[in-house]
Length: 187
Image: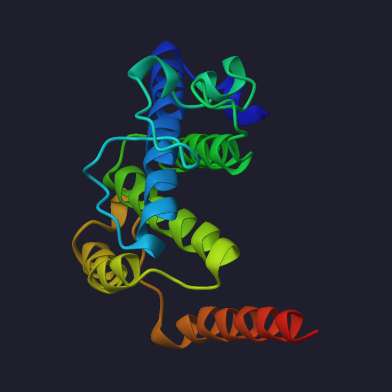
């Protein structure tokens, strides 16, 4: 916890803000995870119960808090709301905090937080449906190129270009993970 003892009041304010923004973005991740496979818009209609379809009022849509206060159930139909919702919100919030602690007040904090949102959507949609959303994949390709280009111009902001051969480690690790997941599915 040496990281926390070196923080000043401004850092703590941004730390709490990172957590809150992460929870809000986690809530948005849940919308994408739920709607992308169904071909629904992520904008309209507003949030609604996955069971009864009733709109969720703003005070029942506060990340983390509302799920706990409603005991994980819809206010209208009382059907259970998946534990995935608060897990995604909490995970996103915690990852935003970790990213802030690592990169502080740099452009990298924003960029890596947005990349994290995309990865969370990919992981949870893949766990639920065994598909990866094209909406995120197709957006991720130019974002990845953009981050690499940012490294050329802003290396002091946490973007470091690696030697192209070192990228092979990441490619190999990614391929191994995909093969292991494929093997697990077969078993």
